[in-house]
Image (cartoon, rainbow, N blue to C red; front, side, top):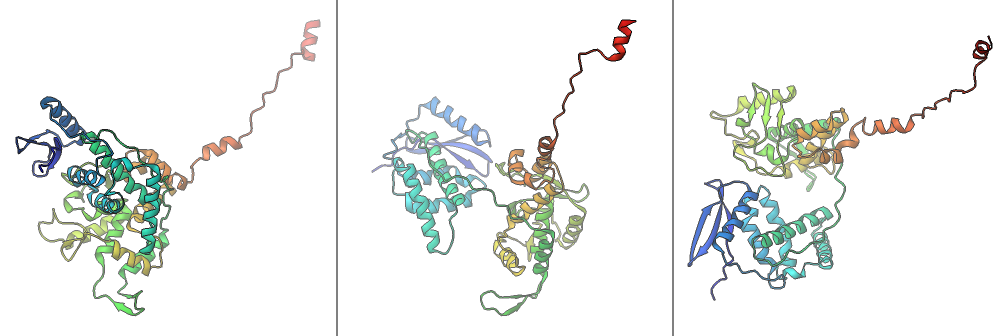
Length: 389
């Protein structure tokens, strides 16, 4: 049985750095450039293409469209071209066992709540925890996949999706004393193995991990931005670090251009002196000359050695922003340093750390109202004397 024509769709061509409109015509695949790197503009180009050639598309009702097909199309046509493709792929893997065999019409609040309980039970059996935030992100991917299918003309109507209410942002940050403990644990050449209880020795200093911690604290950058940082993004003469990778795609998680603090400058000069020749395109944080793809496991081990709980690499970014707020740095400045697109996000997470937060409102409430004395309308004695003379 021949496959049904799913209609024209968008495809990112890496070597051309552009979106392309792809469709089948007379049994042959055809494509043309959308002439843009912007996804919204590419969607508009796809709409114009469909109008121009009156491309027939199999539009089906939500009762016939299977969710596994919706997720597969979303992953192939959109997700693999985003910076969050790995996280999105993991979310799809979690969605498939529960939703894969169901039609889109089954997506209702009752079943979404059943999915939430299913994820919690499954995580509990594995000794893990599935938070409401994680479940909301997974259902968010399902919602995005259904919307994508609808925009591509394969689904007759979109479906609203229930998600757990957002949780309060995690407020774990490190004191300066805890940072010292963390760095001491990194530089220690011996540690207790938590599984065997035996004392283990390191024949090397974990320079890459301590360097990562310092970069995270002084730049307030995300883990991915630090691990992909190259020497071409660092200008020691001007004293700035451009966290935006050359040729990288613009995502909702923006990256800032930050100044280099004097203490970090010292470590950068040391690291640069150790870098090989033609180091411009080499990674700043590396291990034995190779880039570091994941640092979470070694970081958790060091945090455990330092006696710190509930600490992840992202805690360092949160710590840097908290220190700035505690030093009374304006929220809009912190927002620019973090690369936030709106100061509302910064205020929601960090404003309560600012010592002057809501102080103006406090003073207004404590201020005593001014009581205006009414001037007497009766003439004074002096005026009476003047009037009688």
